Image (tube, rainbow, N blue to C red):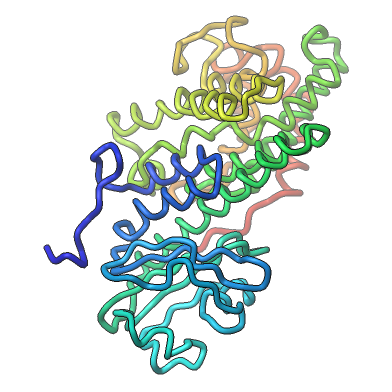
Length: 394
């Protein structure tokens, strides 16, 4: 294997992987930790000869870090309008250039001392770029779609990490904004799972609204009166997007498999409930706080696959031993899975989904919650139609 293609190792001696990089980025507490994670993983994952991380800094492109077969521009700053990383950020879109000397957007004089012949550049946080990640090759080439997709996935994960760091810094510097920062961190963490899963962001929005509708309907009927106070229902709504955060630790070949999982693969998939609890506990430690938001989110992530009859996972809890938050989330999650189309299955009509759910009364679901769901099933249908996904091309 040539030096240009040598795969660097992580600090633990393991080959870099998207899973490890995503987890490291999710736990980063500062920009330096983000840069270190990208420096140690990104080049090998993209299979490039060089990687740069460029920060947007007061109208300039700051080449903050790099990992390359020979030096590039680390530490230098260029006007946004004068370099391709600035073009990607200003235009809010990735760019692939097979021959840099045939493209007028490239500052050729800055590139002549380097090995670079071809490149790909992806903005970080595409709606409002704060950085860009560049991949470079020493021979003229068109990067494969897999390499481009990997670069975009890394940029998406880095976007979440930069958002988290910004919010944590705001939390430390301005305690009076703690509640707003905390809620934003929760949503940023939820997007980690969203960037990797077959489910869409609308799944997170729909399940949020299902949870609130079911909780409010139970409260109106006098069920679980001690637990379903208005403030607790608000906690359920805001914490629900984290229910599958543990999927950030599931390998892509299992998480994205377009078909039924084998028994062994399903056992790996089931670990996402324990992983979800661990990720949220780590977030609490890094923030130095334990709040009702994180406590509720941790409970939902860990228990929403438990079943009323004790046949669920990860702990096989039964009946009222399953926390109410997990029991409510189970109804929301299963209904949305049934009525939503995926590449590996068709969507059930609403009526069939409701019949299926009703048949699971006392088996999968708390009988009281199942009965309430059936009574307000029309509300669930309305929520699904309001936040419906785009059709999947087949």
